[in-house]
Image 1: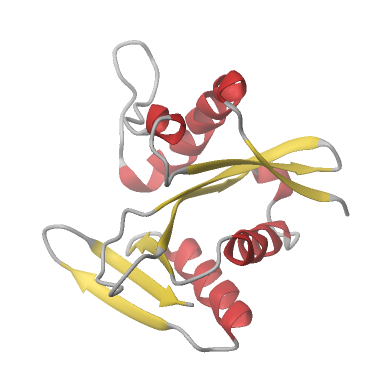
Image 2 (image 1 turned 30 degrees about the vertical axis):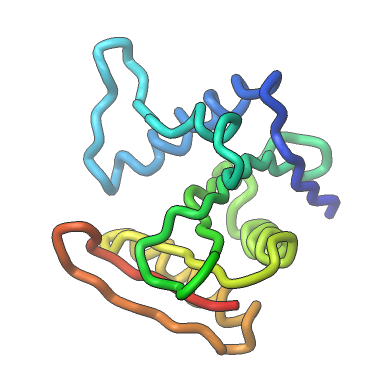
Length: 162
């Protein structure tokens, strides 16, 4: 199976904007988020991926078909004592799920940005917790830290490694 991860140039931002709607629609089942008065979900940080230096938007293709996206940045919830990357958003279209694609993509992304990483997931997203625990454990040979935080600023898991 041919899996490609491509940087998204500014000229193709509309592709990510459209995929973001599907991602947020899927996620709204858990988050309860509503669409706005224009029948769209809001994602306030999208434009920053082309204006801030340490943000990286990636498109995922499987057999030349668009299959999802990954957003990487350096906005962290925990102290890493230095620079680290954060896997900000990660989305695989339903058609491509449960085939090992997401895990392969995540591992390729981790390897493409050397150094420490942080991956977060909300506590109510049990499928994501299962996916990230397994994927990160496989990638690190079990050498990662999992922090459960329940507070005003975050209610979920923080995985630190690298």
